[in-house]
Amino acid sequence: MNLNNLFLNYVNQPKERTYGRYYASELYSIIKGYLKPEDFWKTKEIDIIGAKNILRGEAYESKLKEVLEFNKVDFKYGDEIKYEIPINEEIILVVKPDFEFKDFVIETKFPVKDVQEIPDKWKYQCEAEHRATNKPVILGVFNNIFDVRFIPYKPSEATWKQIKKALIDFHSKVPKI
Image 1 (cartoon, rainbow, N blue to C red):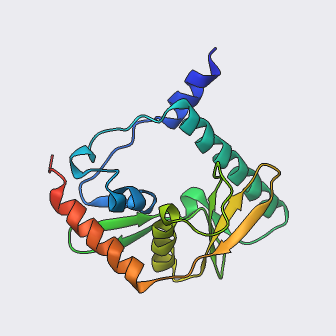
Image 2 (image 1 turned 45 degrees about the vertical axis):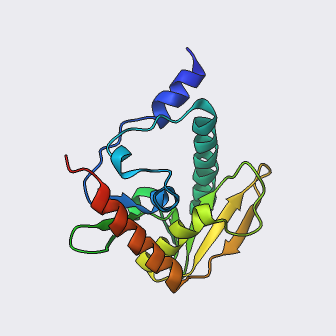
């Protein structure tokens, strides 16, 4: 049994794409041009380092969920949370925060390098989560000793306009299949 192959198989499960449906987690890639419209239908394989980073973050997230449940904190997690924001008649932005509480949302990340403020690569996702829930969004940054640094996101009308413009432009260039 090759554990690395198991990790890769798990993380690289095929994901079905639908024309006009875009995910908050891919906004940065769309805005920065890393995800090109002509590649929308292609599956990008995640390498072993990326796979291990994803699994590490999911493991920490799962443990935080257990701790919250044990302490009887009222929250929603994972597949319990899904919002769809219509951008126009053809475009839906799918938003799936990690944790949702009565008064706020937490988007968790486990970066390789320490983070003191919300970088661009996550601000678009945080903005979308704010727009979807109309709640404050907090970036929960895990580190190796199970500390979680909470960084509040400041919503921005300019960022929201940038997201909508980028999605409309991107969508207009995605080849229909």
